[in-house]
Length: 367
Image (cartoon, rainbow, N blue to C red):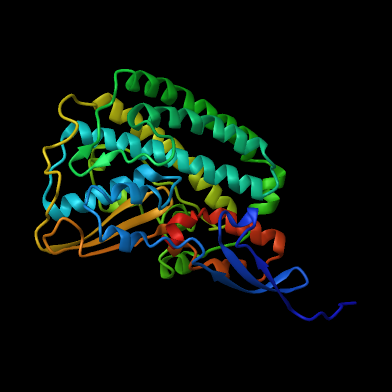
């Protein structure tokens, strides 16, 4: 006999470990079944875009660190590429290679946290994420060699990078790149056919190809739905057209595919870094750029393939030392567009898994 119950409203967040930050989900439930969901944003809003309009183009870089603070190097890169397009600044070869290496190390860093946290949400408490934090620490050691920082790096500059790689950087990078494929094999052996992971994620939270495209999803969330779209291939920036790598895609668009695409992307990042190390040139690490950059009057929209998807900057210049208008396309915010469609009809326990599979950072959502 079915017992009739009245729907009721529950708030998950904005202070809840499973919401990955100050994110609130206003959920209408019938028992444990989700009938409706309303995402509530704004608890972390810091006005970064408006602050940027009062700073110099170089002075904005520390602000970009605090967007997706789990992928700060990628934020630095996206801003610098936009400024370089706007001001006509050329980047030396050595700096381009160093940037690609750092961007792919940052992708590894971000995906390790994304997969580890997702597995935590799925019930694999602590063990996988501790394994993945182990490798992330090695990448942070490399970042610390270059910038002195382990989270917000302020490392890239319009025209290159803030300082050249020290002598110990490449040997340490070689050692890490040699080790990483074995660790990825270890993760696969532990997780790929794990019964609990399969039960919690296979066929759960399906995002169809059509809905993924219509909601402007990008990154692993889009590719897991079977859309082979990666800006590094579709609209190559920096020197990505010099490297051979694949674009992993899923078929079902479920939570398991989103996990799997990130795992496969980490192998491709290692592949790109290996090629970049072999081709790594000598020379200048930064071109000569005025301390106060004054781009000509105009506007630019520039985008990169950040770890979570398409990260873009729209800048309007009035030829002063600060942008007239500055707007950021936050990947995490856009990828949340289809959250309601993915969750309605599933239970509360599935809600946590589905939300975790999207991989968001609230610094990028609220800005």
